[in-house]
Image 1 (cartoon, rainbow, N blue to C red):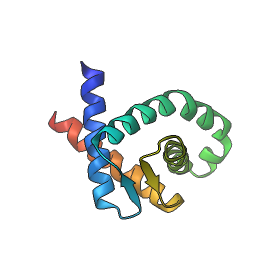
Image 2: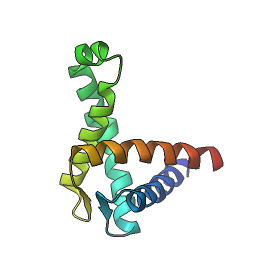
Image 3: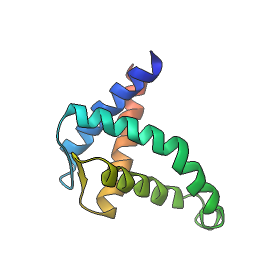
Image 4: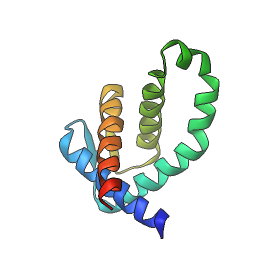
Length: 110
């Protein structure tokens, strides 16, 4: 039940973030739920590999390179999902930041 609730909250957060940011578009709530599921899979499989491969750069930037990895994950999700569009790297970076903040707020509430 917790995973399903987390997916629903992330889908709602993605819809809200896409509404706030003009460079990101999501077709509907079903697409947002698919996006939440794809992001969960990418964060579980691809993100650890990218973090491991970029350890020296992450250490040199004091962890700020992890923001770049988050943006790359968002761009990869954009490539995989038909109803989700991000206009560029900066919008992907902003989307990941806004999505993280909204998800954290929703997690505190629910």
